[in-house]
Figure 1: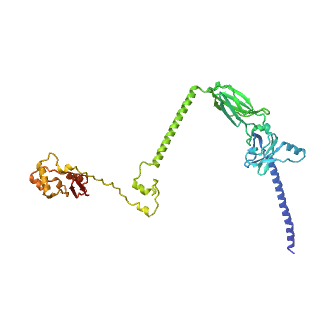
Figure 2: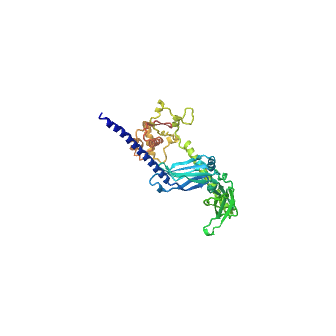
Figure 3: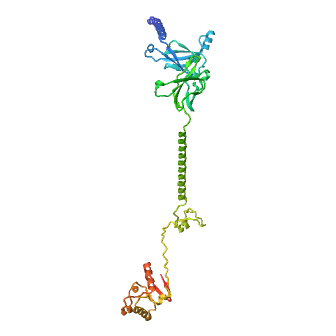
Amino acid sequence: MKNRPWKGLLSVALPRRMSNMFTAFIVGLIFWSLQSSVAGAGLAPPQDLIMITLNTNYTLTWDWDQNSAESHAVNFTTQYVGKYKLKYKLNSKKKSPDWSTACEEMSRRSCDLTVFNLHYLSIYVLRVRANVNGHHSDWVQKEFCPDKDAAVGPPSKVETEPAGSDLDVFIFDPLTNNNTSMKDHLPKLYYHILYWERSIDSQALRTQTLRSSANMVTLPNLKAWTWYCVSIQSRDDFYNKSSSFTSPQCMQTEGNTPWWQIFLYFLGSLVLCFLVMLLSLYTSFWCYRTLKATLYPSIQLHAHFMEYLCDSSGSAIPHLLTPDAESELLCDKVTVCAEPAVLEIHSPPPGALLAPPSGLDPDVRHSRQDSDSSGDSGVYSTGGSSSLQQPNSSQSSTGAKDVWLGPFDLEQVKLQQMAPGLKSQRLIADEGIVDVRV
């Protein structure tokens, strides 16, 4: 019973505390929403929207006050819509048209619209806003018509070529982002051609102009063998569009070739042809000698080597040795020696055997005959050279100073001089016949 009053007090205090907390939450939420709305209203929008264009390349740029966001990161969103769609939406009493987003939450201050292939003859409305921490600034809009606002570029390429004393100029049309000619969008596009004679003195420069819509133009009334420079500009008069001039292209004109130059050309061609022919002949001769020395060498193998290297059929073409047992025998050491000379001994005439040489002493001749009759029988020992040089005992007893050697003794001496290593066994003289045994 005593605790009941306290329970009643607690039951009353708890709902009051919860209601106070709910009230504080509601007040904080309202204060935060008010602060957010104030911050969103204070965010500065982009300024100075500018379209940078060239042919069909379009880029939207803008400026923005950096102080309005303090240190927060700023992003930008870019959208576009056709102007005719915008008018149609407003006439149909719809709240907002269907905008196409080109760049969403991008930190850079530009947006490239080239990839969206905006129609050249249409009119578009572009808008940009800033985004900081989920807060957005107001949209800033700009109207853009490519046909009216897009700049035209200079010719994409210029080439010059001499045509006698004149110059032919080849002009290539400006190109779109899809590499097509800008004449598809500007049918009345033409070119303003500026040309002049190149000179060191810039004050004496006299320029001439020419207008043409063709892509090939001949510059008339030029001097022969003179340098001229050309610069070209693209133009369209409907919206008074004009591009910048191309970089100057210089070329020298030509004329009639003088006779001395023709003669030099002819002489040079003759010398060149002669050098080419001489070089070709030398190359052919060198190749012929190389092939001949390779296929038919001047040094030939000996006949007994060719017997082993060539086929048994008699062909002169060598054949490859097969790795067998017979081929190993061919790899032994071979010693080549020269064949011994064949000695030819001719018999003296019959009269030389009977008559001694003239001028000899008769005593010597008788001593020779006595020795023959003493039973020597005409056989002389060949055991050494002493029997050829020294007289026998019967000769020495007669006191003869000179000993006559017969023709067979002379042949034996010659034989010993020609072949000292050979041993002669015997010389036999019988009725004019000589027998040599080796």
